[in-house]
Amino acid sequence: LVSPMLEFVPNIRSGSFADIGPRRFMEDEHIRIDDLSLHVGSLFRCPKPSAFYGVFDGHGGPEAAAYVRRNVMRFFFEDVDFPRASELDEIFLEGVAREAFRRADSALAEDDSISTSSGTTALTALILG
Image 1 (cartoon, rainbow, N blue to C red):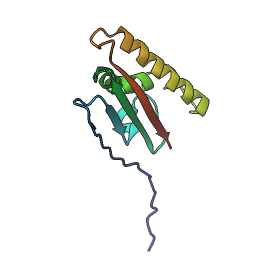
Image 2 (cartoon, one colour):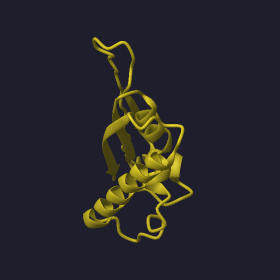
Image 3 (cartoon, rainbow, N blue to C red):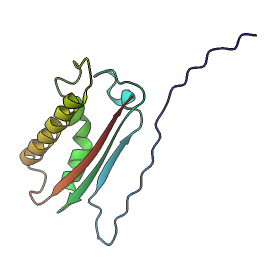
């Protein structure tokens, strides 16, 4: 008998937990994407496995953290240079992250629906291969 060739395809699984603590309102947001290729496959080819995670620590209200959470994929992956990248090296990815956060900062400042007293810090992780 000839045994079929098995190919190991790694995958990423994650979980999350949020705790409001002693505050009256939750101001924090997060995003968990365990299979990035399902979300941005049409924009660029992701090596497998690929994932994207973000934690947005809101302050002065939930608006800024919620806004960044809703738009973070656009800020990161609609960069005009991202789909054309033939090699995803560290310097390139650092530039993409800097530009994504700059765009997020500008978009927050321009959006009149978000209180100027609301802000957020952000921590993101991009896993490629």
